[in-house]
Length: 511
Image (cartoon, rainbow, N blue to C red; front, side, top):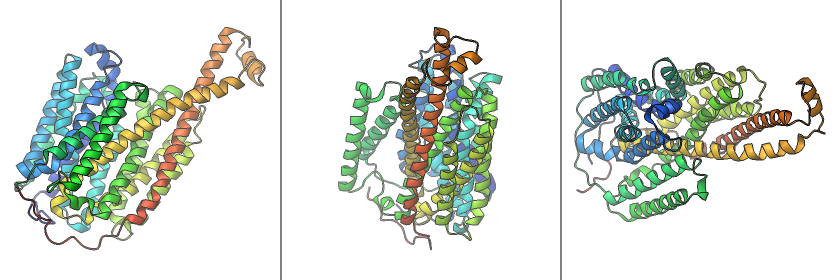
């Protein structure tokens, strides 16, 4: 591997930045936009309740397995060629998804979407770092982070609006014009990149792919199959653990491992990756929790839910606009501490949510959390890549994105498990206290004009208990996310403020 220049000069940097961001927003949106369209797809495709989720699972697993290949493919065929192939393939697969007539076709086309979309986020990050001078890396990562963090928040809202206003197929067709603009923008503005002959560690990739695939399947299907009471989940967990162990041993003993070992020797990058994992746990977990609260507990329709959650994205955008400039005068580590503090503060206030609140607590905590996560994400990404050699950016960006995606999946699974368990526990505890002789029960029955001992009132009381138990369970999840956020604070001590770009090429790899 030869040394890469620290700055790639392009004549149309603004156009290339826009095109790369359109590509990554398109891909990140597809991780959440299809969720709200599943019920419509299920009826139209004739799928069962337990099989329609493969529309989501197939995309996530395919993307996770292929993503680590980004660095090797970029070196082998050239980064600009890989980018164009990925955008074109993703756009075509999106069109095919919209045309799918059966569940098997949809799953196959979603796999194609995942395969072609896997490289878009790491490629866009590497390109933005390469075409901007080091003093503008903060602003470049602010632009990239805006797409990465705002797109998942807007995905369910956009998906719901498209499904309600048009048809579920437009959830996929919307990618076609965006993909075409991104393709022609990249083709016009991105210069050809050199290709490097590089050995391929098939064994290492196989172990890593098996680990990622088995882990994602376990996390995505665990709740549906009641976790470790299912033989499938036990097998997937065992495969994930065994594959990870084999990958670590093989990488430590191989002459040319699949992932370049110099990446793991960079303390800033490793610490930033752990930060990225933690931030993704909180970001996607809370994103998954809020819509059900607004729709099932507060009774908001899909469009209103989107409007209430939109200020969270606004908070993130404001932070992104500010932090790129603040990093020139403020230590990035201080910004990370402030951002984590604001995020923890927002989560603490979210533990005060109740069934009789209005939308204001959701709005202001959303703005506060979005602002806090925005302050964390940009310095984290900038510092993490500041001390890496430029020629390792694509490979390290792919690994960085993979770690974030795994964090998101673990976060969603964790809060889902806690939510289900706590609803049952809370309901049982409330049920013990709500009897015909409990204070307030007779008053409630009288207010409703019902007999406290009737089966009809018992059913009403059960609904009230279920509602309260559910809200308490959501509050418990927010408290857990608050502790996860605070636990990430000591990682700031591992980060070093970058002083200068690394000099010299990485150690060449033999073919």
